[in-house]
Image 1: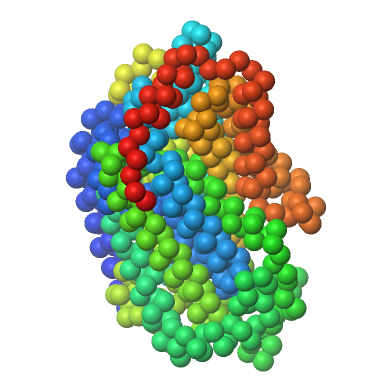
Image 2: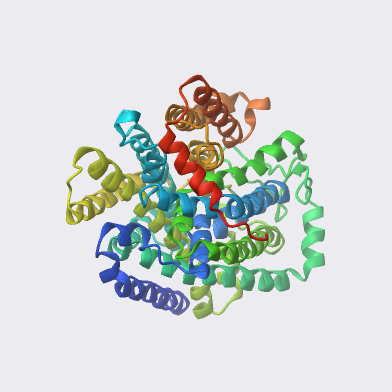
Length: 530
């Protein structure tokens, strides 16, 4: 290991030590009971709520996946995705946060998303059959999609450390996963949220530093834009660059320059499909839980503004890093998968090693902040909702906690198996899991909060139909191309919403108790200025 690599490693070790200290400081309180472990006792302030929600949501794909898309095929795909996410962020905080915070308390003080949906439709009541079907379905889908999500984080760890230290990808991926696993078991939700706050700050600083230095290396903004305009479709809102590749999927280099074919069209339907990324927010458990965990409902207004500003700046900078990378290092990354390392290349080539190490900690920050959320929520769905909620209703707090930790281990192992493929594209993995959550939980979250006629059977149909349609569209219909080539979240979300309405209207209306809960939450909402 040379001196530069050692300095990078030392800087990252300092950061990781800080994360561990945060975990230790919250360990005692977090492990006092399951509500503290899974929801932090509803004690988060507005800044921690906002920053931890966005840091856990964005993950390593913000620093690697999104710049990689911009580097590989240009502005359109990355920018329309970013615009959709920015709009979705704002609308989710504006429309969902306050009502969910209030409703989760009204619904028997729900501390997980499956808890909320089950209690919202009073599955424990004899009138409703007493079987927790919604809770089971919710928990299973959370388990499936968060396992996929966690694998994307482990891929990020593997790519980061193997690129930095020249070590084997699989070894680095496993070591990164073990660190995340130990940290999650140690501190629970409070530690996760507190460290996510710090990591959100590290992420935005890292992005800003690299975009400024990268622009300087490129010769200024004018030089970056001129280079982008010289590549067919690269700097267009309705066009897409088309890298010329060989049979191995590697971009062809000629006379020291990367070759591009004729630009592909980026039509209106594709734009709408890409903007649909914003719909995913309405079903993201890691964000929705922050709404439930804030200490006071009125503080959500400040959180919304903080979160929106952070997201807009971070997304814009991440996209531009990919555009800058094409000017500074046009031939450094010749596959779609490898292009996701452009952030690392810019950082290690432009900064002193010790500073590069702290910037690299930004990627580690994004990865940790997301993967610990994913693992914690997935394990809570099994321990709290399936084990205690269905199979062993008299389970003690200690039994629930141990079940959660065992589940964490199993999920992490499965996610590591998925992440073993070093050619995995982080952006692709994230997009599938994002669609899964958005279509499974997004429509039912909106209808549960805003349509009193929604009933248990509509909720079940919507979740199963939306979740299943993601798989059907992605695996069976999307390969057909044409109109079927759109992002699977959009058709799955619409199909889920349709099922909720149709099935709810065709079956009996909710009981008086459920309607009373709905009216109580609706009538007591405080109207605040946007």
